[in-house]
Image (cartoon, rainbow, N blue to C red; front, top):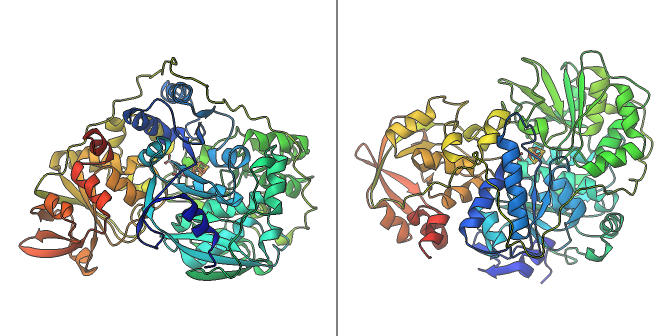
Length: 638
Ligand code: MIC
Ligand code: SF4
């Protein structure tokens, strides 16, 4: 049978289950990545598994998110991660090297391999033809320990590309076009596999930028074939030996196919405050912009930075605009400098920052009150920039350049065409620390910022809980567990960070939950979209949230809920969502037994009436819930 590439890679790595969409499968994981904001918990979780060394081909611990060192917390965590990596056989990437996804693509990714990362943009490496997926830290810790990664076997959406990108249009416009068509929940349960004659015209870096924001569609992964462009990219990175040609079999079938004619795309912009609120740049010219930032994992490659530099060469940015450049990697910055672009950016009025996530996760670079900010980042969820009521627009580097020059949102096709990009200079200055042959003697240094992992009790036989918060559709993990420069440093301290759960939605949430525990939260469609942060499950669980009811859940958050023993239930009758109000008391008689017995409808009473609530869970996921979470299950010897 002719197979698509996604199913070929899955079949090659299948350790448990059968390749049937929707069924739970266990995949062998070749490589893992963690970053500092999710990595400290993942490290503590790995330690709890009791192994002496990681059991993967490559595991890398990157420091890229928590770069501000305003007190001891972030540097303590970085030292912990450095010594943890040395102890357990991981590569370590110190602060300043760049963003995990950019670095992994350049230095470790290989076609045909699987990669699991504790960051939702891990699918970036799909640009190299690898099956790269985001997950919670606990799943990544388990993969580091050699356990399979469990997920519902995805369906495959083929995206057939034809033609070539027109002048002024960038790779970002390809994924913004898909977001416009499919919405932030349009990719749930899917791998997006790109194919067709348009693929050959895209560089690996452009392909990766497209795969990166597949996360915004809720997709499990995004994937390009591995071809001559992939071979040339790997050769330029000094890694020609890892290349192999990979593509779908001729005539391979997809569950559905979207067609994109690259030559017909126009420059696009995602408007506040959702990545799928997409409109053509040409229609937005009246929006004044005070801040433009070029950078991030999905917009800070050498090609992105050099595109900006070419567009600004010999010009200066509009008065009143702040233009910030956040290189995705140290390599990109070095190449930009060697190719002459850095000089052009400085002369145009840009400020150059260190390589890292920075303003993308509210680690500095917050916009001024009431102002609009245009960024080449993957996300613009409300308040994520650090400024309340922010107005963040997302676009590619050409729109960013045109906007910085005009002082308002602008269409780059109104400027003169750009010359071709100079090839990337052969520079690889990354300061990556390789694993030790034997780390047994290394002392792991823990600062006071690292609190012991909380003990999570098993599920009680019967449960009564009060609904203390009701929310709408597309609630993000940024709503549930906000990030930013003040809260991110608490990622290694669950009791402390839990006090900020839902802080921007209901500042009293933590107190209410602790006072009324056990409690429930109600949401609409696509609950928990966005980041992989497991804190969005663990911290509410710590406060006493035992049940979440929603119309549907986003993939990574759903898995994190199981991992930390919160029961994710879906309304059988969507009208029950409307009937349920804050303050309602839900009774779940015999809950643990109903879950253990594999019942799909979970008995629940609301004021004497039965509510139809569905638990769509595998036998493995049911065991997690009953035990109170994965660590409790493992500690209990299961
Ligand atoms: C994000 O872009 O939202 C983050 C910050 O990179 C998160 C990870 C985190 O919360 O630490 C993600 O994408 O998973
Ligand atoms: Fe970092 Fe932003 Fe990418 Fe998340 S989306 S990894 S915060 S650059």
